[in-house]
Image (cartoon, rainbow, N blue to C red):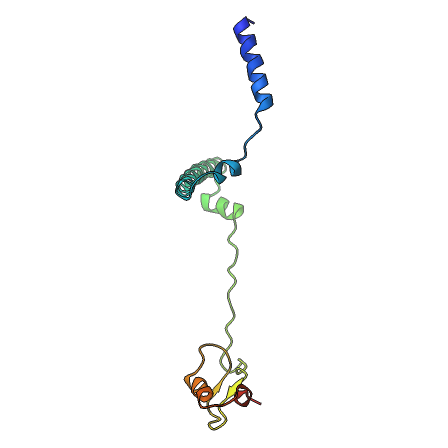
Length: 140
């Protein structure tokens, strides 16, 4: 080992001892919003490219397995990643649904009601303007 290599090795050792590792968060915290947006775009592009490459590699592996075993490509896919059944919301028939509880009723016109859900009806606002108290508008 020559003197230059020994000196270089010693210098590198000293430098590496003094330098503390920098985290990605430390680097990003110093960037402006515009720089962060550019970095985000770059990362998203790199991620999409990486996913595409890995998917191509996986696809090629599955095709090789399919060719070697004679098992159809789709069957191997179904075995590796079976589709999960989608959960569907069960809708009740109108007859099965409980009617919404009436929270407000107009004292002079009992057919005017409101459950307290959704947009407040005009009659309720008008009743308040006419001087009806909130307690008088509550359904019993």
